[in-house]
Image (cartoon, rainbow, N blue to C red; front, side, top):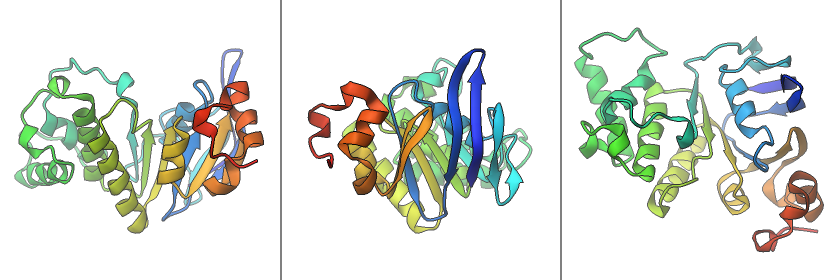
Length: 243
């Protein structure tokens, strides 16, 4: 998957400018930048949910202009209506909606697959629980299960480590590592420099434009982080940054 001169404008505000990136199979890419840097916008373009103003997203030389079963998107928790009357298993089964027409009742094979995906994230015991009754970490696990059930080639995750407990963070890291080892393409957005360095082998520093891209050890320099975050980048969290 790649972007070519990708730009997104909202009225008179620029969200992304001339972004050229390539996301390869067997690689995990972190998108790192401050709030408003365009990380979520970029993920939604990659997912075919948001049309670019200029440029394009390509998957195997074909333009991505709508949601694609080969691409799974895990939104930020803040974007989800947790009061919606739907249970955990039905949320997971949404992962099949792009690959087959949804019928009711759910075929037994799909229900078994949904329960297996929930078991992979430790949530099968909660299959009939309303999604809003779960903790933040549990909700994130369910959305990871939904993505796994879709069986995509590309996984896009928006702030998957934010607002979740340490066990869920560790589980998500393990799942992403396993998916990368299986040859999947992983892209996740984060503002956590330590998590980006720990969990990705490619880091993109983004602030509407690409500031730097490459292995975390190469791109997380003081000058690059200043260019990405401004003066706020100089903090204890940056203590290990290279000069």
